[in-house]
Amino acid sequence: MSIFTKIAKKYNWNLRGEPTRLNGGFMHKMYKVDTKQGTYALKLLNPFVMQRETAMANYAKAEQIELLLEQQDVPILPALSFGGRKMQEIDGEYFYIFDYFSGKPLKSNEITEYHCREVGKVLAKIHSIDKKFENENFSEMSIDWEFYLAEMKKADVRLHAILKDGFPIIKDSQNKGNLARKKLPQIVSICHNDMDCKNVLWNGNDYRIIDLECLSYSNPFMELFELALCWSGYEDCQINFRMFQAFLQGYKNAGGKLPADWETLYDCNNGRLKWLEYNIKRVLGIDCGDDEKEIGIQQVEETVQHIIYYSEMKKQILEYCII
Image (cartoon, rainbow, N blue to C red):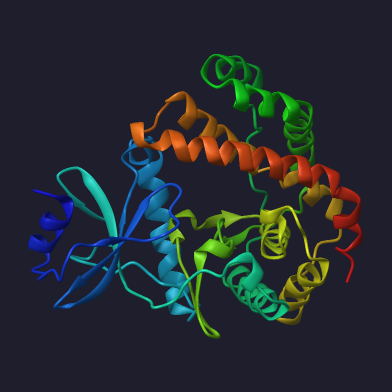
């Protein structure tokens, strides 16, 4: 019996045709499910992610924060609750169910200054809900890049060459990030932690923020900087600085406080290194499913390109942070 049949049986759904896979979802799998009772979005959680020791605690914290955002009328697409729980489980398979929102993420050529201002505004609102003046205990990033480089040489010669090309910049980014994190302002607030273009669905000017499982308390300045870059073209290695400044201006106009030390934030913004490691593991078959290798190959290549581009654009990025 398929997972969809089991879910339909559990919730007394009458399915209308086969569920359809939705785009996106680099880590988990999303489906649109049509039933006589309504149309839903179903997120099947990656079983290898769910095996991590911290997974359940992290999801539980995120769900508590999600409720806070619902209460403050932030335009999110929250998971539905069944039996008093958001996360559902059948035969060891975990999932979330959502009302289906008829919107789509914007492609890079569809994003305008208007969209950047709007996302900047809603980010300021999220950051203002429960701000705390305390020091976030950052653990140092200590990824063993020499190990991965050696293993990749055995597994994929082309990817090994790409990794080797970016190796000095990758190492430098890790080292500078560890030093910069010690200089961050002692403040935390609610952060989405993954609110890039793929995780905001638009229907005209109406939109919903999705992928809320990463919600946590983090440094808001770091998230502001990272998202201003993402929404202005960093993903395509082609930053539009008018859109970059529109994002920052939208944040500022909505009451968000801008940071004083942008260079520290620039050095702190190295989370892509962890994403790179995750996808290297996919290529090497470490802690992942057999069907994840191809996406891992694609993501390793793209992520190294992003890291190199980011290094090359440092001077211009810092110049346009001043508004």
